[in-house]
Length: 205
Image 1 (cartoon, rainbow, N blue to C red):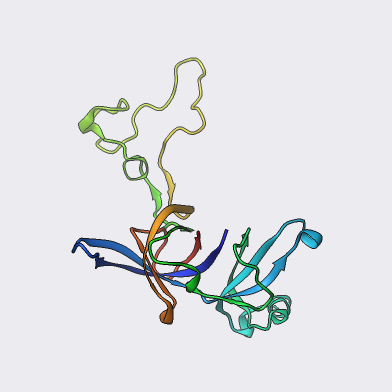
Image 2: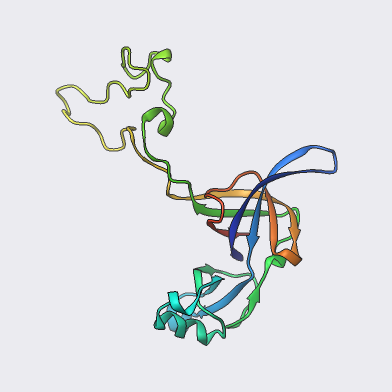
C-alpha cells in the first residue's frame, strides 16, 4: 500500500465546480526519504521505511544518525514502514506528494486530540436525566445504574464509564483528494482528520 508521512496544517474550505462549499483539511505530505528497504530474504517481509521531518544531530543518537547516513540523509523525527508499496524504490529515494492524484481516495491515520478525564456524556454521548435513561434520578450528567444484581455481583468489562478520552490512534478511511499542490508539498482532503495542528499523519492509498 503506497503512502506518505505528513503533517496536519489545518482546516479550510474550497468551492467545487458547482459552487458548493466543501470543508477540507490541508496536509503537508512529504517529501519522504526511503531510509530502509525491507526484503523477504533479510527481514522476512517486504516493506519500505520512510523518514519525514529533519532532526538535528544534537537531538539524535549515534545509532540513529548512522542508520540515516546509509540512506544519505540527516536524521528524521518520524519513521514509518509501508508494506506492499506500489512502486519499487531504492535506499535514499525521495517520494513526494505527486504519488497522489486529485479525485482518488486515501486513508489518513493519526493520534486524536487528548481530552483528559471526561464523563459519560462527553465520552459516550449519554443523554442525561432529560431522557430518563440508565437509572439516574436527578443528576444531569451521571452515568446512573451500572451494576448487576446478586448474580453476577460485578460490573462487566467494557461497561461505558467516565475515563481518559482521546489520545488514541484513529484511521479515517476513504477521504477524497480535492487538490494536490505539488510545488508546496500540500494535499487537500475532504473532511476532517484526527489530531491537532502540526501533528504527524500517515496517508495511505
